[in-house]
Amino acid sequence: MDPFSIENRVQVSARAVKRLRKGHLWIYASDVAREPEGAAPAMVQVVDGAGNPLGYAFYSRHSQIRLRLISRSEDLPTPEFFRARIENAIARRRNLIREGSACRLVFGEGDLLPAVIVDRYDRHLVLQTLSYGADALKPFLADTLREILQPAGIMERNDVKARRLEGLDETQGILYGNVPDEVEIQENGIRFLVNMRLGQKTGFFLDQSRNRISGQMYASGRALDCFTNTGAFALHFARSCESVLAVDISADSLAMAKRNRDINNSVNVRFDEGNAFDYLRELESAGQSFNTICLDPPAFAKNRKALSGARKGYKEINLRAIKLLKPEGILITSSCSYHMPESNFLKLLCEAARDAHRYIQVIEMRGQSSDHPMLSGMPETKYLKCFILRVL
Image (cartoon, rainbow, N blue to C red; front, side, top):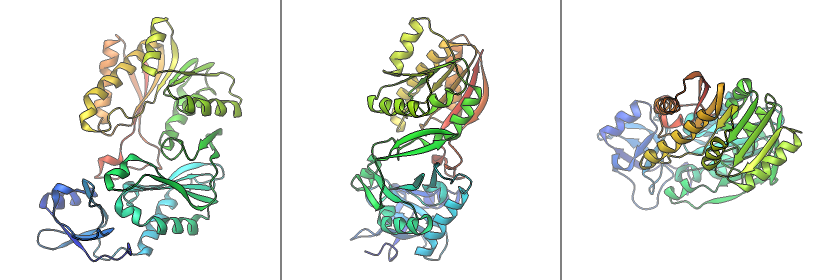
C-alpha cells in the first residue's frame, strides 16, 4: 500500500472540530463519527459533520488516539511536504549539531510530525515511529534522513510498549549503514558512553540536558544523586562538588555509570546499587546530610489512575531529601509524569517542605531541553518539570 495515497475520509464530531481549532493534533476514537472500512490506510482526510475538509491526519484504527493531524491544508501531504517538515525540524537544532554531540532532531507533535522521533548521537541516528500511520512512512523517513544528514547509520528503536496500542510489534534493528552497540557523546564537555540498543528511551535522557548544565551551576559540597541511571547528573556535579554519592536500582545502568566516571577521571564520584526510597530512609536514620541533592525518578504516573500513588511517591522522596539537606542546600527535583502538572508538583514540594519544617526558595522552574519544544495548544508535549530549589 502506498502510504501517500489518500482515498479515505474520516468524519469527526463537533467536539473534535473545536479541539483541532484550539491547536490540538489528536482526535480520540469517541469523537470519530465515520471511518474507513476494509484495509486500514496510513493517512486520511479529516472532515466535519457537513463534509467540510479540516486537513489530513495519520490514522490508527486500533488506537484510542484515532487521528493525529498532519496538516490543516486542503492540499494532499506529499513526500516533498514531509521532507520539508523534517528539514525545518533539523534546521531548528542547527546550533546543537556538532561533532560528538547528541540531541533530538524531531520531537513528534512538537515539530508537527506526530509520533515520529529522531535522535542524533554523534554521526548516528535513532528513529522511532510510534503510530500506525507514522510507521507506514518508516522507509521514506529513513531514506530522507539519510539524504539530508548522511549519517553513518540509522537504528530503529521501536521496542516500546506504546506501539502495542497501535497494533504494532515492538522491533529494533538497523535501517541503514552501521550503528555500533555503543557510541561516545559529549555533553557540556563531559564524555558519556551510550548503549544504542539497551539504553533508556533511545539511549540517553536528552530532555534533561540543559537541566544538568544548570544544576551544575548551583551544586557544591557533598552531593547525592538519586535515580542516577548512567550518571549524567552525578558527573556534572563532580565538577563543582567535593564528593558525589549516586544511587540506582539497576546494576546494568550503574555498570555504565562507572565506565562514564572512569573515562572522565571523576575520582570524587561513588555509585551504589539500591532502591532510592530505602536509601533515603537509611541516610536519614544514619544522620547524614548533604549540600546538594538531585531527584530524577522515572514517571510515577503513566496514566491518571496512577496519579494518587505517584503523588505519594513524589512527596516521600522530596520530603526525605529536604530533611537531608543542610541549610542553604540545593534540591534539583524532577517529574516526567505528564499527568502531574507543574502547579501540582510545586504544591506537592511546598507540602513536603512544610512537613519537614523547612522553607524553600524557588530558584528556577525548568522543563525539557529546547530540542523537545512544547506545541502551543497541546499540553501533552510539555511533560518534564524540573525545579531548582534552595532549602532554608
